Length: 102
Image 1: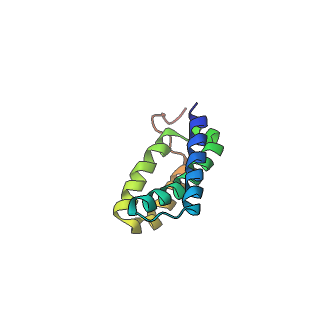
Image 2: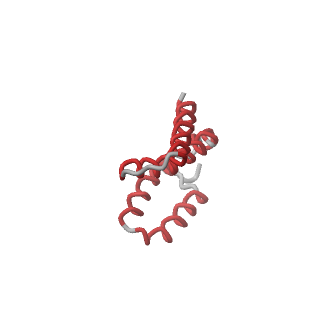
Image 3: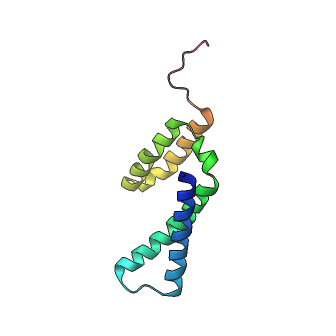
C-alpha cells in the first residue's frame, strides 16, 4: 500500500510541476510550491521504483539520515566530512547488539 501511495504522490507532484511550467507562477507562495513539486515529484518516483531496496536498509542507517540532514542544515560545510563517514559506515556494517565470538 505504501509503495502505491508513494508512486501516486510522485506522479501528482510531477504533474503539478508540469502545470506550473506551462502556467508560470507569479506569486511567492506559488513559486515555492512550484519548486517543491519540481524537487519532490522526481524524488518520490525514484523512491517508488527503488522501494524494495530501500525497505531492506538496516535500521541504524535509516536513523542516521535525519541526524545527517539536521547537521547539514546547521553547518553545510560538514557535508564533505559526513557523507564519506556515512558511506564508510554503510560499507563496514556495524553490528550493534551482537556478541563477539559467535
